[in-house]
Length: 231
Length: 220
Image (cartoon, rainbow over the protein chains, first blue to last red):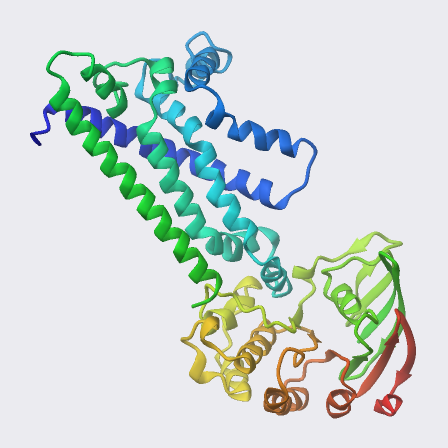
């Protein structure tokens, strides 16, 4: 039963690659946005907040279609990137990573934002009186104190990215070895006669990955509390 | 040493303070709500005056008419808060070293040793702030502020959060600091007895106004 075939391995490894890249690229943007939402008041803040959460509530096929329109070969951004920087998203694994990153973004930002909001701003004031410029305060006080939340966000985002299906298949289709992730492989397998055993194996792998990520995120959250209390 | 002439409106409360002092320890005395913390926060650069000037050691750090406001991190002041505000993710040694690193000062083992001895915190260096008592935390906070080599040390009710026993534990360290550390201080307190022991000059604040200024005699 648990003989994972080379084709299944390909899907698993591709999923891992897509999810890792999506998480790593999304993280700096996530931190910046979390900080902005936690610390700054500006015009259009609630709109930006809603925009970030949109992929969470929008039908994934809509997000995927919008990505296709924007980042596809003939899309406004996609065409520019392909012609000037040679970066192509459509029907490539990079497109899958983009779709997963966008879909995972709300989950990635939320724990980061909460952990930044939980930081005592008086500690940042203390750092300032000790001669730390604002960017140094951020890197020596804010970010280290928010680190468990940042890691929790990365883990949750990763878990979401690895399971993403709707937006990915809409945007980059379901090409074995290029854009066929675990989810789209399962989708293909359950439509194939005799695909049940293989689908079952991939289902177990996804459950394992998701559970592991949730447990890790919880562990990081508990670390955050300990850190803020200085133990 | 310190010249202050500021106005600040904080909701219903208006603060209008003016004094100038060469004293080694300026005691800012007043009941809670008199504006002491707002005033010291303005000297620190954490709060901006609406109008007026602040001059520390000959350098104008605030002059609203000329549009000057030096941010807190470039004022070279030390600030000891009532709630020590040690960085919880750093141990005591790293907390002590923070100001030196931020100001890119060369390491000065002699001063480091001297301040650690003066405050008796040598045994705490490896600990996290969460594992310190209130009195220990406040001594570390004093050391951390001093090791950033400030030209002026601001203390906002540094004994305020401690019980009587702990106060008596810290007070001698403050006296030693005044006599040996050679850093002028502004010491905020609502406790006249504390200021009598420490201050060389008193600025008395009442409802946002300076009502008297002079030696510790004004505390009667």
